[in-house]
Length: 296
Image (cartoon, rainbow, N blue to C red; front, side, top):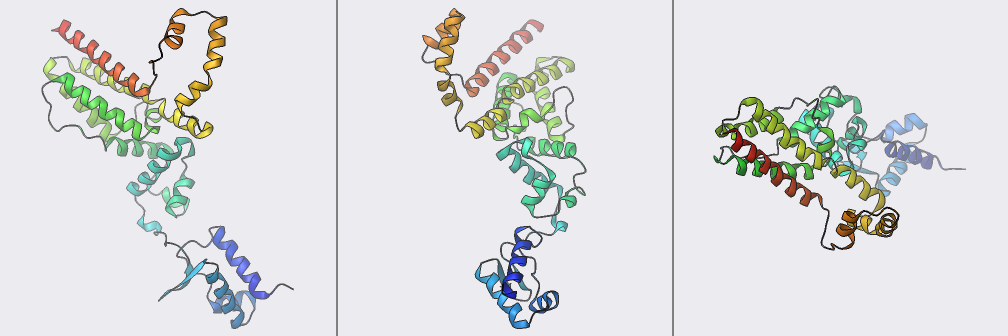
């Protein structure tokens, strides 16, 4: 017959593993065990000893026997900033598809419903995440007087930000932009640097949108590529190498001289998002510069 104390240990272990008892929570005292299971105090004490031996519980002076591990913060310690920071960590690591209120609550060690007092909806969480991420962007407090140098510096800072947060490119909307204080400040700064060109405010706004849409467009490939790497275990270059034979067979059936020259006779061609970004930013600013000169 199973010893009484082993049944008690098994049940308390189940509660701990199921999260019903979390790190820092008190486990039933010896007296509580005697009442719940109808056993002698010696049996309850033996169950406590077995749980400690397994490393599941520890004795905390002034508190009693608690579940081992760092005690979680109370729900009252929650705030929007803490929730958003946890959400960004998850999105950076696993992508937006893996982000949920339940996942955030689990990482924070709090009840899921407690999050909704601070973030009423998923949409509001995404806006708060966007605002927090854009708040990391540091643009010079003053303009240099050289609009191209300022926009180039700003564009590179934005690209670094999108790389740091791959979810940002696929989350921010161009046609239905999320209202973000830091996003508006960034747009204001970009339009301000163009003020010496004497472009009208409408044209400056369009340039700001064009710069953002270009960087966001390239950055839109970052999260899908990160997911593909997790799924296949291959980098983009490694995946391309696996497609080389397929490409050769394709061009044999469908002759395309430019692609043949590029891929078969130009060994130094290397498609890389950073290369694409630098090339595109330079050409974009070249075009804006020529347009400003004509307008002048």
